[in-house]
Image (cartoon, rainbow, N blue to C red):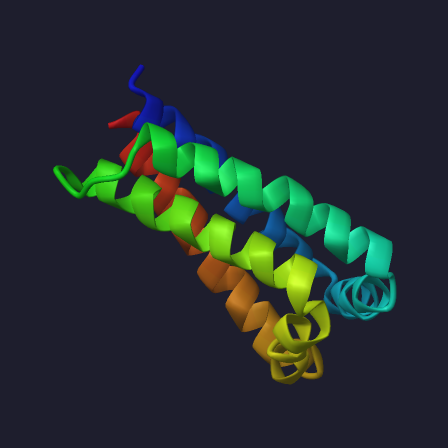
Length: 127
């Protein structure tokens, strides 16, 4: 199995889990984001883990020769950027989620969207 296929499958599994959490239990996700932003060590550690993983993905795949490689390149870049932002300005980054987490119906809708993305990534990774 190609590296980019395995990466898409892993991100698909991640999106399915996140989508289910948002769809089935929005109040828990609201508490999670609130607690996360109130814990500086946790947000920094998350960023310190995400940034190198995103950088590693970019080292492994950094082109747009195929759809799969392009998606992995974008995912790696997004992880690197999000990791840096989590280390440097976590409250600013997490404040962007406030409209989403304040509305249970909107969070459920986003959860369904994340589930659809997860299914698409799994399909791309397996095909």
